Image 1 (tube, rainbow, N blue to C red):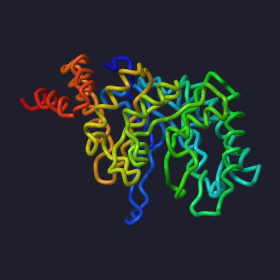
Image 2: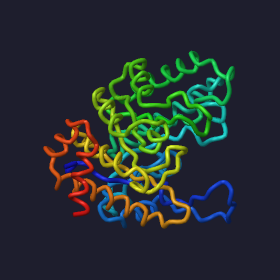
Image 3: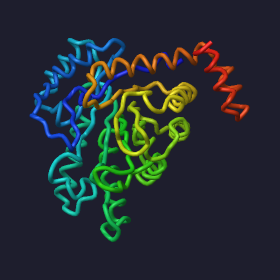
Image 4: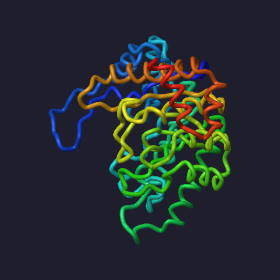
Length: 326
């Protein structure tokens, strides 16, 4: 089960994190090469996800490529950052200033070039500033049109590179325009590009009140599941908790459906820790996911399908209770 899936980690997982209520001394930020070395220290990981321009740029790509090779890792994906600069405060692809929109498009295209050079085959795109906070604050039709127009340009730039929209319901804006899996499919329809799809971040889906497995099935039906980020939360905010610490059964069901739809991409871990050691967090997340997979293998596909067909969760619980506790 999921034998062809490869596991990776977001490079930023290993960078210092703290909450907004506890100022702390500025911790040293690891270099990209150091982040790659940290990822390589986790048994089972075969890749790392890098951010442009934070981790990889045209100027340092040769160095990054050499570091990946030296540590036996592949680049799982490149995330094009269009949400973290001051000029994007009022929007990136939806900004009123055409120069800002063009700057965002240029950043995305550079990310696409870097993904191609590193052999990733995909980029991640999170439109965290393209949204609103209040009623009467945005021309929704105009904003959606600007996103469509921009994505038509970047999708046509190098059609062999898939673009995964990392949808999110809110944060940093109180409402984001591309907020659910269904809206990604609507966006894909409007853009008209087959290389556009969704990055399923499990934490974002959870607090959008989506069911993880249902989203996998839905996106796969549209051939639009580009990439997966694995973390956990309490469905209230983007906690980026260690995988499996909250939503045990839904995480297992999601893995079952990833196998069922034939997903053969990457599963990238991105827990962001403030107290726990980040390397241990990734290690235990990996072991947990592998443990769930092995548990389902022991139960057997036929038995799981039989339980689903009864429409009674007690049947699946009986299988789990027998496998785990007896």
